[in-house]
Image 1 (cartoon, rainbow, N blue to C red):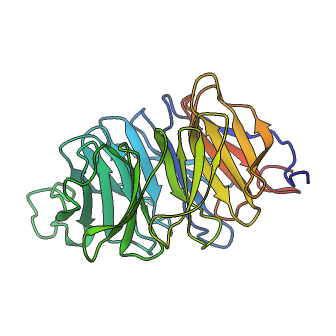
Image 2 (cartoon, helix red, strand yellow; image 1 turned 180 degrees about the vertical axis):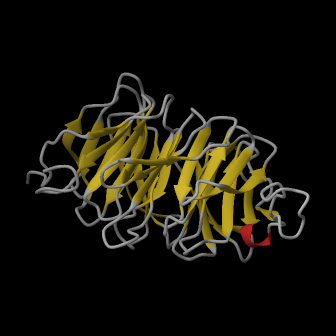
Length: 332
C-alpha cells in the first residue's frame, strides 16, 4: 500500500549557525497551537511556532554548546543542557533564565515530568550521574536579596550512583511521574524508580546510542531508540520490554514513531547519509527517502498532532516535513 503522505518540499528553519543536536515539541497548548525548541552548538537555543517554524525567540545565556533542549508539556518552561557545565530552566514568555543548575562536567540531557508548570527537572551528562533538581526550593531573590535571582542552585539529589558506565545522552520521563528512562553511552537503556531510587529494568542495545524519545503522537507510551543500524521500540510502561526492533541497512542517528499511522522515520548518521527515511512499522519496509539536509540528522520528532515531523541536522538547519494529506500550516 502506498504511504498516505505526498512528496512535499520541507520548510527550512534558518537562524542557527552551528549543528542542531536536538529538537523537541511541546504538547498542543491552545486549540491547535504547539511549539518547537531547538538545541544548538551555537549556544543559542531557539523557540519556534511548531506548525510554521517561525522564530519566536532565542534563549541567551549559555557559554557553551547546547546539547539538548526540551519544553514542558504546556510550553511555559524550557530546559537546556550545555557544555558550559550547566543546565538552565527558562521562562518561555520572557526568555528569562529562572534557574542555572551548575554541574561538574558537560550536561547532555534534561527532562521535565509531563506536568503543567513542572517543579522538578532531571539532568545527566558526562558526569555519568542522573540528578533530580527541586525547582520549587530555589533560594531566589526573595530570600536572599544580595544574590540576584538565579544565582542559587536549587537542591538536587543523585539517583543510582555509579550505575551509568558512560555519558548519559538522553533522559525521558515516563507517563508514571515516578519512572524515568535513561540512555547512556554504555549502550544501556535503563528504567529508574524515583521512589526506590534504583533501576527496575534495563536493555542493552547493539551499537552507538542515538536518540531515545517517547512517541508524542499517542499515549501508548512507546519509547523509540536509535542505535547502530537498528530502531528499537519499547513499552515505556513495562520496564525493559521490547515491542520490536527493526534492523536497517543504514547507520541511523535518530528515530521517531507515529503509532497511529504505523509509520516511523529515521535520520542518517553520517556525512554520506543525510537522508530522512519513512518506514512501515508492521512490514518493516522503507517507503520513502527524503532529501534536503546536508549533514547527519541528529534529532527527529513528530508534532503532537502527528501532521508533520521535524528534523535537526549537523548542517545547522531544522526542517519541517508534512505528514498528512491535504493542506496544513504553510502547505497549501
